[in-house]
Image (cartoon, rainbow, N blue to C red; front, side, top):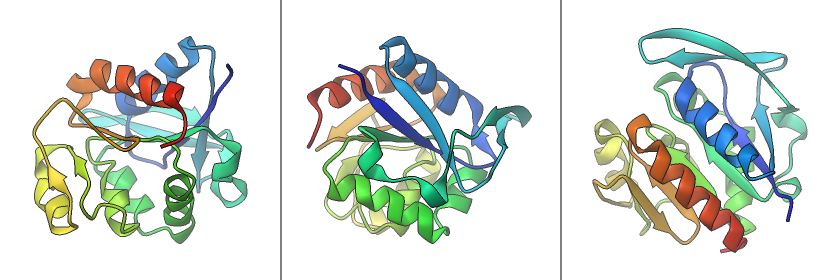
Length: 177
């Protein structure tokens, strides 16, 4: 069955945390859309410097969670910090939770969930440097390569991408949560 997955990102996303899930999801025969508050293209961060630019498929202002089967939130330090203060981004993310659709967040990606007030009582993981922020938001943080809690799939770093991608596909196949 064909699926359509939104990848919410802006300038400064960690390149591998967008490109690897995008490629893996497309290998399943599914469609991915990079959704962004920016138009045209967004530039990645590739470990220690600016990386490639990626075309934006859908402007955030006209994106609807109801048009997608799941959401991916890549990390990077810059990307989630900008998205977490964007009211349209927060509303878009909340809609996926309200519609019980799978949401995957990796590395610093879960920071967006803090501002959306979606972490109280949830189990998740992230890059260690934001673990205390997530705990302060009410999450039960675990240091594991992938944690799944009711359709929320989280991982720590790019090294965890194989486990993250596999669990993401498994949760999307299960559909609503």
